[in-house]
Image (cartoon, rainbow, N blue to C red):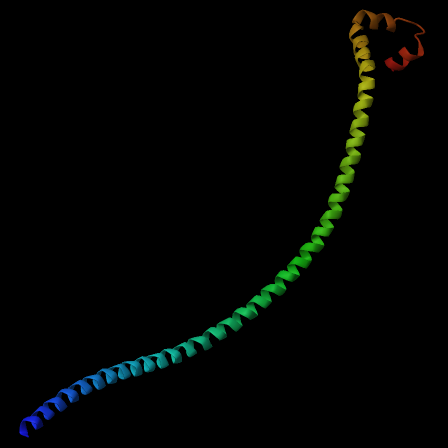
Length: 151
C-alpha cells in the first residue's frame, strides 16, 4: 500500500538522517583525533630536536663539571697541604707564646721580689742632697763604693 510505503520511506529517511548524524559525529571525532595525532607528531619531532640540543648542552655541562671538579680537587689538595703547613706554624707559635707567658710570669715574680729593694733605693736616692755630695767629694779616702760611683 502506498501509505505504508510512504511511511516506510519516512521511517527510512529518519533512520538515515539519525545514522548520518551519528556517522558525522564519529567522523568529526576521528578527524579531531587525527589532527591531534598530527599535532602531537609535530610536537614530538620538535621535542626530539630540542632533546638532541639539550643532550649536546648536557655533555658540555658534564665536561665543564668534570673540569671544575678536577680544579676543585687540586685546589683542595693544595689547601690541605697549606693547612697542614699553617698548623705546624701555629703549633710553633703557640709553643713560643706559652714559653713567653712562662717567662713573663717569672719576670713578674722577680719584679715583685725586686720592687721593695727598688723602692728602698729610690728613697735612698731621694734622700741624697747637694750637701751630702759635696761632703763626699771633700773626703780624701772615701770608701771603695763611693769611689766607684764618682768614677
